[in-house]
Image (cartoon, rainbow, N blue to C red):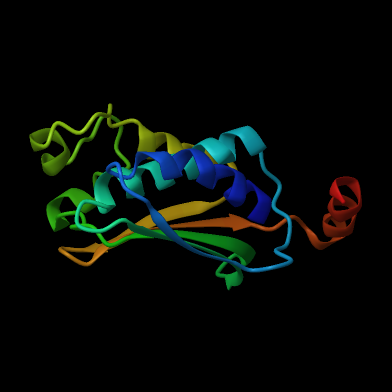
Length: 165
């Protein structure tokens, strides 16, 4: 996961309102492996990063990317948090952000490019990997998308380490 996150950051850094983007990242070393389609998962991560840049860097050029192993409700997982310090998502729009073709009022008013399919696709990719995604936001406090993916079973951790190492 750590390598996948690192590889996903570079393309997202270019679009930060013409100025240098500050990415605060904390990636826990020696994360456990997750069973995943690298291309699909990279696409999902890049979408979250692109959205943080597109919607969350208007008044500042900071986004946060935090990855850690956790003990989730359904067992061990790897948790990815993508944060911004933008205007947040209005309360009445939060339950719809993962709906297909949904575009927030602000995105429409500001004519921000998009189809409203990105977060719906991210959710489908995460759920196809047995994971979950949800959003936490407040008005003027920014937004955090939290992705949790189950780790590979213990008997496969060593096998994956040897095949990728």
